[in-house]
Image (cartoon, rainbow, N blue to C red; front, top):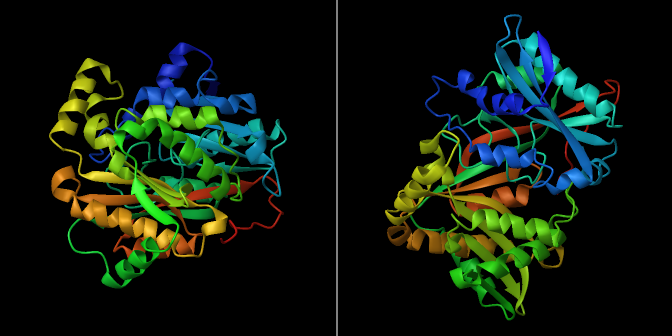
Length: 389
């Protein structure tokens, strides 16, 4: 077997296309949009290249057939937030063969070692956490937009190499049938009536303001989490711009205290249902027509919660309950107008029992589980899981 660095347009194209061989008979697999993957590896579009670097490889068997791929990356801010400098690997795809998988993992490890890293997390993204993060280990159903999907045997390959679970990510699912728990709804209404607190979703005419509201809260709510750096104005604007064509304002919820933003709960329509599963990686004119057609006829049945946060000064005051409860209440009450049949709450870490409890309070149940693994290069060092919040 031979490993080749992706350093030509031909190999970059093959990096995008090689997974099709693995998933040819998998009815749940949805090919990601090429542009979403390409942006991760484009220094002109990914700001992390200014504080880090990335490399990609393809694996070929003795007959010259491409049988695997992997990327490795680091950024100085995330790496410096851990006891040992930690990089990442991701976009891993491979045939069910330990020798092949281990060769890819070794390649990523050696590259990270050359940049002073002492550990690697995987499979993760060279970018924000709401995309391409974690290995699917339970809930092998069609994935939501920019969510990792993989064959079940990947878990055995990662763990046989020596990766250990750093944390688990739960996706909770809440159907629109049934009512919100009255006990918690009453508590939420009391919070809503507290002097100074208000909760509302963004109107379409105010979408441009949502990026800065989001950034302001994010930098206060998430900055103390392992491996999370501050979000810049440019990053927030880019995120909102990327979401604008598909976003439904009813999914952009904010909590305010004395008219100042203190919390958010961000959900988007599942673009995989609106568009991605129909276009085989490329949008084009046909894809745009499908997007507008499916939105107009409300053919997207899933609202996909991607991130939640409340700034520390307003945590443990019931704000979290009120924000999630009010968003869920409106979501359920407007199901006939919106067409949504389910809310999926993505990326709830097992290190965050408070958020897990919140999801359960609105009647949501665990639907999918992803593992974020960590591999320590010094095998004698003690392994520690993500600290509890």
